[in-house]
Length: 242
Ligand code: SAM
Image (cartoon, rainbow, N blue to C red; front, top):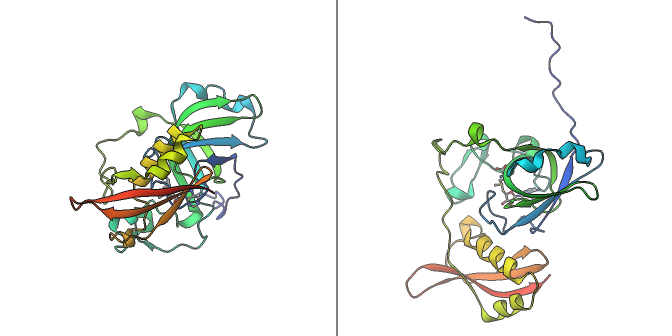
């Protein structure tokens, strides 16, 4: 047996920065990155990590891994979780899931890097992040497709991109978007986020309940309806400035 000391059983970590994103709330955020390409986010590095030298050369990479804390999840965890992908009832082991309720509450997201602004500190512009504003980021690393892209890998109960629903916008919602400078990008974000059907898995009957998803500075109110064809569609009934 070596006489090396046992590793510590706890590590203190300091966030290198914080996320500012289109998502003020957890509710409605797609389950994985890249499912809403119109989602904008910035990673704002904090002192002493906001040194432009620390990101020298990063601009040569198109995608980044973000390691972060699910800071809005509880610290307690359970060995079994109920993935929404399985309808919210079936249980799997927490380590067989990407659940936000996990030991150490660590998240991992692959995001697209759009720009690096070092004019005042360091701000990374990102596309497609699945993180709520305020998320503390512990580390970022460049993505290496030759080492990490494994399209042949088996993915258990989550074998592919989640199914989506068609989304309609009421004339009142369209009118609000038409008056906004960011109307086009907000419209794309609304369509992409709602297509993921943010309703809780156990509530996916065709009831007429109105839900609200906060995006940027608005509350997007929507409900499900059954079209004449029998398919379920989501309809944005109104967009209210939050
Ligand atoms: N891609 C990451 C991963 O696999 O570790 C996150 C996957 S997790 C299923 C994505 C969900 O985390 C989002 O839908 C959102 O509801 C939630 N979320 C995002 N930021 C969070 C935060 N700071 N604290 C807790 N939950 C968060």
